[in-house]
Image (cartoon, rainbow, N blue to C red):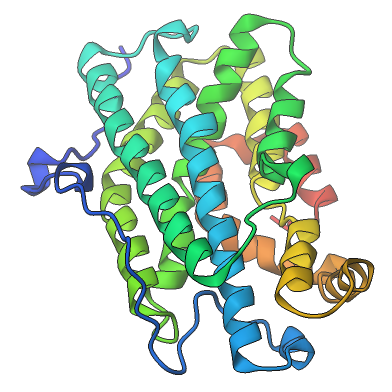
Length: 307
């Protein structure tokens, strides 16, 4: 009999999830010389003032928070919701502990929404274009999932992308938390979210390990493909949204902004950025045995990821 992997819970580390304290960031204090988002040196020459650069960074961080909202409601919560529908049975305690995380995930989304409103009201920012209310990577994931008519495969897809997501969120948040050039309220907001992620990541990794051990060979082949495809999809930067932010925070026409952003976000640059964001996920998938499957290796190789 396969034993469920050990994982961490909040009581074990003697702390409560951040949803208990209900802290929401509603006020902005912008320190001189600090930014909302890590600056891209190649873009700085297009800003006519420090304020334009600051406002562009504020828009980018709003985009990051918008992604957070959709990650929680479109990816992580559905992954937990569908656990009872998986083709393999999850032990009762692990099932209950994962369900308890839904409250945390909803709180993270609420934190993000409150902070978005504070930032966009202060800087007069439009967070998304009318036709692109749902982030690019979510649209891509939905497109991938809709390729499967079989309900079991769709349920598995939800769980697998949940695992992919939870193995990378802490690194994404850490890029803000550990950067002293970032405004303190932004670092505090990300630190609050990150504080829960050690627990969440631990439980999703355990779920990923346990289900992989129980999967049939056919299910492993399917899981390997989905793990690889969704790892890449989760790393797709929305260059169109970045161009939209550049246009609304400068006096540059949108068409010209598209050209500027596309000239910076080259294939090599995108691969370089992706390799940083997916490193922890790749390490997990390697240990799991996903890379033993040709379908996964081929997907990563075609995307420029050398294993």
